[in-house]
Length: 463
View 1 (tube, rainbow, N blue to C red):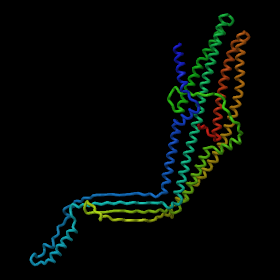
View 2 (tube, rainbow, N blue to C red; view 1 turned 135 degrees about the horizontal axis):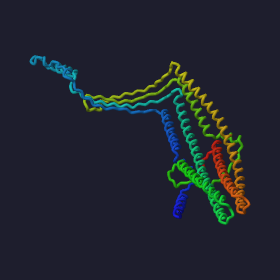
View 3 (cartoon, rainbow, N blue to C red; view 1 turned 135 degrees about the vertical axis):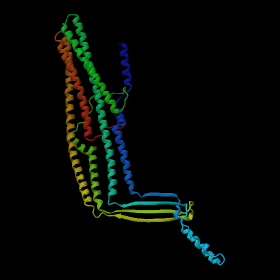
View 4 (tube, rainbow, N blue to C red; view 1 turned 180 degrees about the horizontal axis):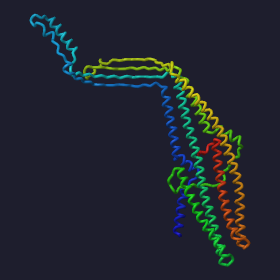
């Protein structure tokens, strides 16, 4: 038994070395939370999309080129044999001029006939520039839309970060509460065991009956499984805590003061004003409404012409042989402005405009509805915090009375002025009030954090 106790103490000492506070827990959760990491990747992707779309305002320049070698073998049927004019002249009577002319005709005719194999080399290079001049506002509106989308992703990351902080805070204090409850159950068992020792002593002296002894033993036996259940709940709370902060190290435990936080009094009107002013969710909806308005304006620009500038410079060559000489190259230059103006699209543009217009109207309605929901949420959280504070004050008074009640019950029983049942009832009452007292502290902590988040205040304390 002593070896087991020493082992447990050693493990507890080791675990204390890895105890972390609330702020460190929040920082670990911000670093390791998978959903928050994915939200950060969405922010990076939104930045890339914005710069990608904005790049369409700049000229698009491309270089194209090709180099080819061709060899063609013609069939015999494609190679006719023509008689030579020089062979038709009389070698005796033909003059030099006639021989010269006949040789020239033979050369011309042979040049007109295909030869096999045919060898050809070609080289072509083209530098092309395309520049958008006017797209009826669609391009500018598109850039504005992706810029707003980028802001949405950043704000969504901020909302997710606040959620992670709130959840981590709640789970942190839930773990502390579970530890407190386990301690209270253990204290109740220790009290029952001490009372059992006193009853056994009184029984040995003949001052109490065997029935009182059995009741004391039954009370201890009843509390032992409750202590085991409380310890199990504490272990489960620790597992949830470690998952929230993203660590698999089972020696990591939360450590902090489980006391009532400093709560700043704020009336409901001021809280709702701050909520409408600072809530990130409302800012997100406002941006979403702006995006729908941008889409509506972009669709209205479909009736306007699209104008673009295109220019190119090309270098090309073609040679009968594989070798390309410097005088085989030619050049070509072009520049032009093109436009496109829709005349009739089968009412497609009109219907698209109507669709985006109603999307815009829906976004404004959703924004107003969300503002009303935020006001309602702030009112609920304000009342919840007020109720939690009132409940804490009541439990604070109750626990003092319960402690005094147990002291009097024990004193009456030891002086044979009361019965053992009074002591048991006082112990049960004190344990119950302690549980309610610590639950009241947790409710105040959770309600204060939820209220602070609902009015748009930042839950992250940067160091």
